[in-house]
Amino acid sequence: MNTQSNAILDTPGAAQGFAPAVIPESRLMYWSVVRELWESRSIYIAPLAVAALILLGFLIATIGRALSEANLAQRRAVLEEPYSFAALLIMATTFIVSVFYCLDALHGERRDRSILFWKSLPVSDLTTVLAKAAIPLVVLPLLTFAITVVTQWIMALVSSAVLLESGLGVAPLWTRLSLSQTWLMLLYHLVTVHALWYAPIYGWLLLVSAWARRAAFLWAGLPLLAIALVEKIAFNTTHFAAILGNRMSGGAEAVTMPGSSPMDPMTHLTPGHFLTSPGLWIGLATTAGFLAGAVRLRRSQGSI
Image (cartoon, rainbow, N blue to C red; front, side):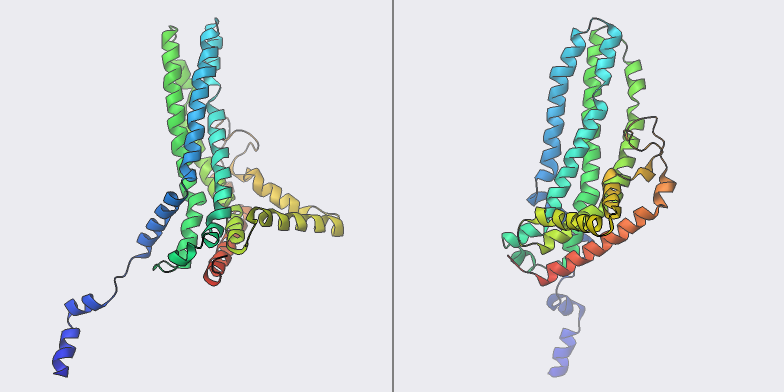
């Protein structure tokens, strides 16, 4: 009788019936990212709202100014103005969204005690933290690129309609805008600066979010300010402040004209110099340390 029972349990069908289902980590990561998008809708609502305001302002102000210009050359110049401004405004919005998202990503679930529910699911702390880090490092740069492309495309179509109504050709407008080159440089800027160069900033904010019990925004800034002040008072140097300023400036190694617009056709890209710069790899190693600390804190800490 025991032999028969063991034989039944050893069959593949029985083993499948009693063994728990194993979910691949990639699938867990995917659904964890989807969960973040569902819970934090400001991730895409804020840049979409800014893009809608840009289009509204473009229609009211820019088109109105263009139609009021009697000089046709000035009319074309007015229509070509706001494209870089639109891209920069959307990028600034998504960066602000990234900062506030990271500060609330791990702190919020402890504050509302939803961490007790999420920890009951078969999702590791590592997967959870990496999914949250993927929002500012991957999702928001791609979302910024997509929204900017659509916004500028609509603006170009409206500008073309105004030019055709004025009896002007649209070829000079599209040639001067060179949207394909502009979009390529925008994507390069988002990957190099907003994803790779700013990675330590997001890692630090996630670490603070996992540790702070309250006022995460203050805890994110006060230690950095304290270190800079102590260095200045004790040694009369500003090395730490210079490091922070260089990190916030946006990776000058990525281009040969620091301070210029990332979508300026005159800007020369230097990806080789950027990928071999020590600042990039030191920043990525620092990011890995911050994320490892955030994983450890989430594992050990419960609700607030």
